[in-house]
Image 1 (cartoon, helix red, strand yellow):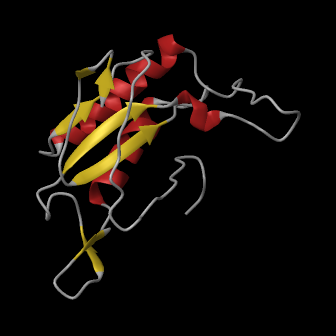
Image 2 (spheres, rainbow, N blue to C red):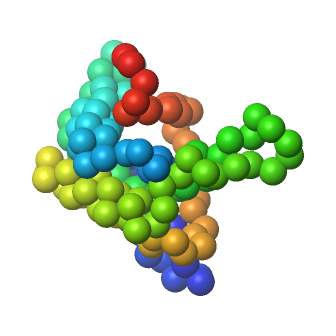
Length: 137
């Protein structure tokens, strides 16, 4: 991931997390998602089954703040971002997420908050999942 041509975050094998923070999200939401994502068994074991988590594969996490995930495109042709948390709310919750992942012993790289970034991804699989701390499981 680069900002103005300079690498600001880079990982090898691991997870790219695009983290959207909603206006009513709390610290509990950040902690829940950090724990949930870190423990997901989505990496293949020796039998080719998704059975290993990030720690087991010695993986890393790249976390990018992404308010556009909260874009509502149901009306008109321009997305509405009214559900996205304002930066002064979103950034501390983003930092709590990152801290919680690090507290689990995982290496985490981050983007820069409210900065235009170029993010490159090699999606091995592909496995792309959407998690929402407010949806019932």
